[in-house]
Length: 383
Image 1 (cartoon, helix red, strand yellow):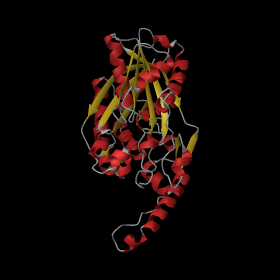
Image 2 (image 1 turned 90 degrees about the vertical axis):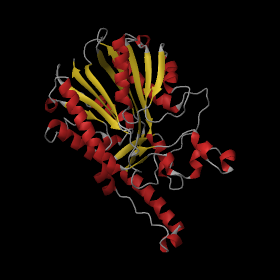
Image 3 (image 1 turned 60 degrees about the vertical axis):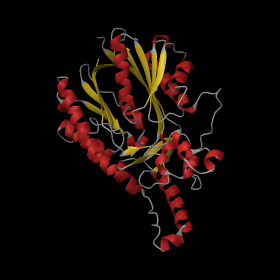
Image 4 (image 1 turned 30 degrees about the horizontal axis):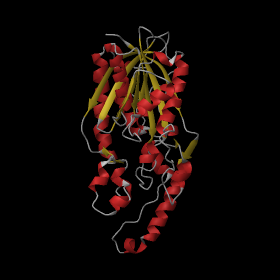
């Protein structure tokens, strides 16, 4: 079986960002307006007044200080609270594909080889902007890559699932190199009117080139082992889909087919955060430790953890369980203070930005976890 190497990575970061202060001001303005509109029902006890958000609440709950987004104005408009991303014609490059292409171009430039050596493209992300044609095929065409391409969605774990799939293709001889991209427009599925989650997500795209060790040049990261796990849970969910329209009984379903017009917030990101924390931290910690020992590695000796960037408290606890002590910032990389939760891209951003300082032979871990539940571990050794 042919071994695989992570040969290069790329990152596209939007040029707009929102601080916690800006986000809180927009939410509080909207909440104050909502409370005023429903003052009589609140006074009668029929409704509860909305509680203001705060910077202190956000940073204590998540560790997030800002996030990058594709459209700042729409999110911060109290009369809108949704990014404004106009539809493009079918003849234009889709916005999700455009982001992926920019990240991929950076990875390809770092790789230093012609795109003709790539035989497959995987678009692994939590939210695709359409069912078909596959975003991966559009990215493939835009970059001039032959071979095959397909989309995959395992929510926040999509990148590690994508890396394993790429490594399996290489091991089987299907191709010598795979491009895996993770474009995430998380701001479009976030309910900015929900105090408990309005701060969670940002937008970004990442790219990874996985190559056969037989053809890889010097440097890069040998993939020592990959492992995937899924356990069904409703604690993180998004019910948006094409069947939403068919489930509606009102006449508006015919005249206005948008499934979001029914006001149901479950068509966006929803989660039961405390339950997720309680379930996922032990599941992921045990998975990392067990996989490391199956590979003959001592988990406490890992040089660096590039974990999914969802919540600083979750990452710190996983780091302690795996390393057996409080990890240093150098050992347990946190980038969510700047990027927020970027779903599948989070662990790859961390890996892309903080992979320096390794000597040949030293080992680290890329790990993602999220809705499903799903989790993936990728142990890598510096070449």
